[in-house]
Length: 439
Ligand code: PFF
Image (cartoon, rainbow, N blue to C red; front, side, top):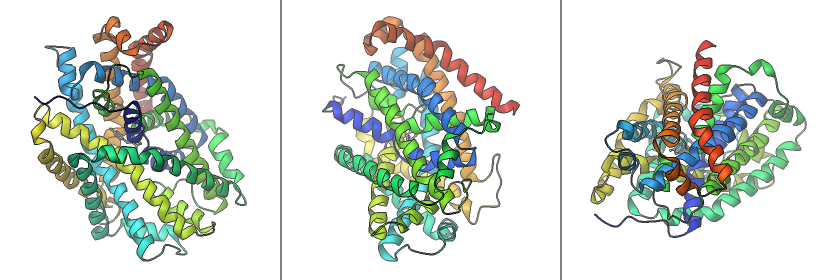
């Protein structure tokens, strides 16, 4: 077997992990989930879930991954020989497969906007109408989704991902700066304060088990937790890397970007008389309208969508990565073929999701369209269950000597983490799960 690669630098891993985490989850999904679930209460629950449950389980994935030094299935087999825990790896494969099948649809929407902005200009009067026209057009969404998948496969199979991650070193800060400028513009629109209130002044009637589960799912989704993606990335890590610090940084950054996205979107939503409960189209309808209020908006919109595409690709490659690395396990030479074969399968499975806003919009599955169903299967079931099992594994199957050896934090932090992954996180997930059904 070939010697396994390792991240060449400390920054390599942090960039890859942050790149996987920060993507459509924070920028596209967070605003629309907050918008359809009462704003502030969702925001609050999301922050609590990220820090109290997501962060410790992210750290658990790092610990397991680096201890195992292999793809998720092999690592889990190695750490718990003869036990069925490796099943978590196969579940992760399935979840990331389904995740990518609809994530790539949204990636395609970004490409559509980019292409239209480049070739036709985007300053139309009715952005809602434009969005609906795009997502209902079967040819356009499928081509865009296919192109997005090809980009993802290309990066995963051709070993240029190091370059992608290095580029994200300046792309991500640039995206950040953009967001801050947009936030200022959005906040200075007339009537913007209504949006700030929506985000930060709680309306407790939304405090339900269902909102809790949605916020928990959002925390896992946006941290890439529960599908063994982070476990896989951490398996390439050298021993010196401080796992606790990395998990903390990724979590805080993720909360920060999510909130920033909210601060860009909601003031504008209220100022421009749009609906916060617009759904998956929210950022696609609101962002162009904000750019319209900025000098050289057309040009900056293109730049912004390129950066957004980049952030999206650094997440999508991590999903395909788990599917490929788990699918081929030790047979490294099959990597290229596997990336194309799995990528094609994911695209095919994603077709009904892509068509969910047009020709298949009347087909109803549990929870809504194909797109909604794929989202529910992962965010409300696959990720929480995966995270629950990972937490229990790290808490009870790995010995304290093993986890301490990986964590190397201050003793009280080691103990606090152990207590959380053993009891707090699993119980919280189970209670939230049950509460969401009682609603
Ligand atoms: N965290 C990514 C995002 O917020 O866009 C989505 C994601 C990537 C989830 C990779 C799961 C995963 F394995």
